[in-house]
Length: 302
Image (cartoon, one colour):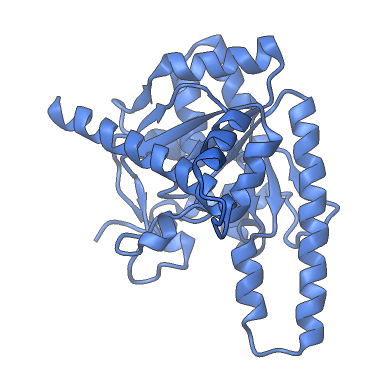
């Protein structure tokens, strides 16, 4: 079996933990968290060690067109990505920087991720890992549902629901600030990493529909290759993920106008559709899946 993230890079995590500054408990006062420059050094070393040299961006012209629309036209930009591992976000930043042009480096610097609070609260090592990129922290609906399913007093459930509401309201305000500053929001519409044999982990979250209403444009990014794989022996322990150096190809769709995309989907739905928001997000996931499969075929034919 491959080395785990902790066994192979435990020294990195110890060093990152020493310079970690992020909050270990999330509330509405700390949802926006800038990247910790001191931890980025270790992340770059890890990226160089695990992402093979022939990795890179595909459809570079689409990334560039997206950047130009954000910086020259003032568009509010959204990047929606497939999600296979905790390397996906640092991976796109790394590959944009590796591309080496001024625009790609600047785009990498503008990315702010939407991140679940578990990344801050679950483990000091994961928190230090997460600090390598800027993020807006949210309370995911799945996490709240899991909390509310526990056998605990109703009062505790009500308090946690209030906490979730406060965090997510503050996160929306923080995201609005990012848009006004010309930053780019990156989000994983599945809300979780894909687990082989569990197709439900590749379904889009209903709340992603709101992002289509809040942004002007988006690109969808498929990810082929995976250098950090979920360990079947301990799938919930992110530090147990298996390190498998791999070629990573990130492919961008053409620019999509968010509101038009959403309205076109809604216009095709029957009047008695039980949940139109689910359908708009399903359409996003279908584009990502098609992009992934098309890229895989091209890579296999080389």
